[in-house]
Length: 583
Image (tube, rainbow, N blue to C red; front, top):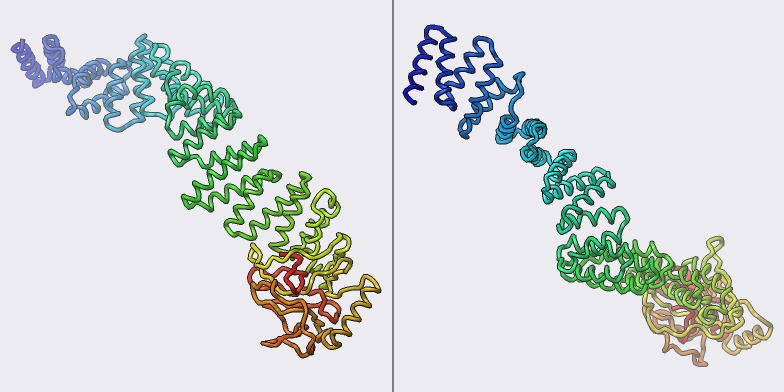
C-alpha cells in the first residue's frame, strides 16, 4: 500500500510539471483513497481546487487538513488554514471542527474569539441533539466569560435538563451572585432558590441563599437555612451571617452567644456587637445592652482601640437619647477617660432623659454633677428652674444646694449683675457640706465667706440686702463691737471676710471662724500679714473676689469675678470654715 501511495505521488508531481492540473488532482485523490489521513495530498487538493477556482471543493480538503494538524507544533499552521480558507467559507463547518478551532484560539489566549466559536459549536450540537457536546461548549463559554449572566443561565438550564444537578446548582449560584451585584435582588433570590432546590446539602448554596433571604427581609427563613450547618461551623463569614439572621429575627440572646464566641475565638464581630446592643435597646432591654457594651469595652481597650469604641458608643447613645442605662454608661466612660467637655455634654442628655421620664430625684443628682463641673454654665439656671416646680417630686434639699451654686457668680451678660436667688424660698438653712478637696472634675476651690443664713438675699452685684429690721440692727451692733475700720468696705471692692485667703487646692476646714479681740484693723495678713478683710488687690489665683455690704464680724457674700486657671473656678458661696454652696 505504501508503494501505491508513493507511485501516485510521483505521478501527481509529473502532471504538475506539465501543468496538467486535472490529472494531478486525480493522482492526489488516488493517494487519499489509499491513505485518507495523508496531509500532503489533502493540502495539495485544496490548493489545486483553489487554483482552478473551485473554493467549495477546496474547503473540503482544507478541512481535512485542519483536522489532521493535531500535533501541538502544528497549531499555528492549523489556525492559519482555518482563518484563510474555512472561517469565511460559505459551507457550514462541522461543530467538532468549530469547537476545535475555538480551543486553539483559547490556547492562543484569544478568549473573545474562543467564546464566539464555542457558542456557535454549542448551537450546532444542540440542533443535532447532541446535548452533552453542547453542554461542554457552553461550560467553556461560561469559564471564559464568568461575569456574563446569560451564559451562566444557559449552562444551568442545560445541566439541569441532563440531570447534572451539581453543575446546574453551581451555575445557578453564580447567576444569583451576578444578579445580586447588578441590583436585581428578586432575580438573585429566584436563581439562588433554584440552586438550593438542586443541592440543599451544599453549604455554599445555603449560605448565599440565606444571605439573599436576609437582604429580602426574611430573617426567620435565613435562620432555618443556616441551622443545619451552625453546630459545626467556625468560619467568620458564616457565624457573622448567622448572628445577623438571629438578631433580625428577634432571637437576641442566641445572637449574643454567637457573637461572643466570634469575639472570643476570632476577635471579630465588634460592629455586629454594637448592632446587637442597639437591638437590645430597641427591645427595651437596656441592661443587657450595657452588659454587652462592657464586654466590647474590655476587648477594645485591651486592643488599644479606645477611640473606635468611643465613636461607636457615641453613635449608639445618640440613637437612644432616652435610654438611662446607656447614657449612664456613656457618661461613666468619659469620666473614666477624664474627658470633661464630653462628660458635661452627656450629663446634659442624662438630665433631660431623667426629667422626661419623671425621675426628678435623679435629675437633681445629675444637675449637681453639672454644677460641680461648670457652675458658670447659664443652662444650669434653666434646669434649676425646671426642677423648682417639681420640688415635691424631686429632692428639695438638693435643689437648695444647687440654687446656691448655680446662682453664685452668675452673669446675665447685660449689665454684669448676677441673677438673684432667694435662698429663703427653698427653705435654705446652712450651705452645702464642706468638700475639703478639689472637685473631681478638676475645679479649683477658693476661700469665701460663711454660708448665708436663711432669709438672706444673695444678689448678683455682691450686695447683701437686709431681710428685716432685726438683722440690720444686729449687723450694726456687730460692726460697733468689731471696730469701725474692720467692718468698712476696703477701697472700691469693699471686700470683707473672715479667715485666711486659701491657696490653690487648699482645704478650708482648718480656718478659724473668729479673730482675736486685738486690734482687728491692724491684724492684716497680706504677703505675710493677717486681717479680717481682704486686701483690695486680687486675693486668689486668677480671680477678683467681691464682698457684700460691710459687716463688723466679717459676714459677707463673696463672688469670684473671673474664672481661674485651667478649667476655671466655680462661683462659690462658702463660709470661712470651708462650707461651700457648690463643690
